[in-house]
Length: 167
Image 1 (cartoon, helix red, strand yellow):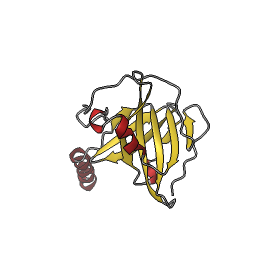
Image 2 (cartoon, rainbow, N blue to C red):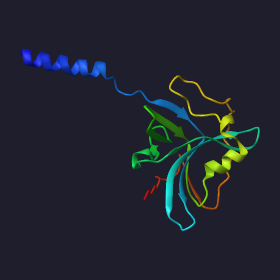
Image 3 (cartoon, rainbow, N blue to C red):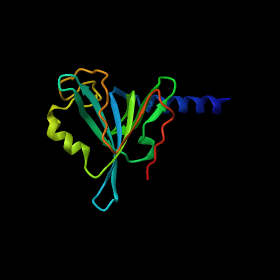
Image 4 (cartoon, one colour):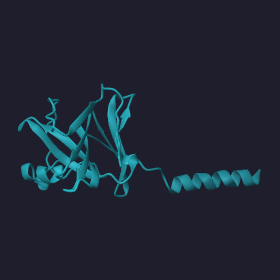
């Protein structure tokens, strides 16, 4: 009996001293899985790009990007909520980012670098930080028609199950 109580107390103490990660939650209009290839057609890296619609400029602005380090970073369909969710460790924090639209592109250029020409990094509305703040000013969100690059596939929350391949 004493051993059982001691074991329970030890387990309780372990949980109390190491609470589970609480995810930082964010929402964007579009999550893009980008596969960037070099001039020889070899995969350089996979990245997640997080976009938000700007009604003032009638286009999407890149908010943030993260390298895909494991298959678990790939957004998954949330059939209950009807959207897509990417969950990953972002520094020392657990982060979830949700979007109604998921698109996948294969490019021989880095879209994030192109986006810097339109909207410098200093003006981007970053993802929520651990303290709940953002680095740049907030842009209004709307639900527009998505401009699509010729090398893109788009999956919306109401479409059939997604097909994601990572090499």
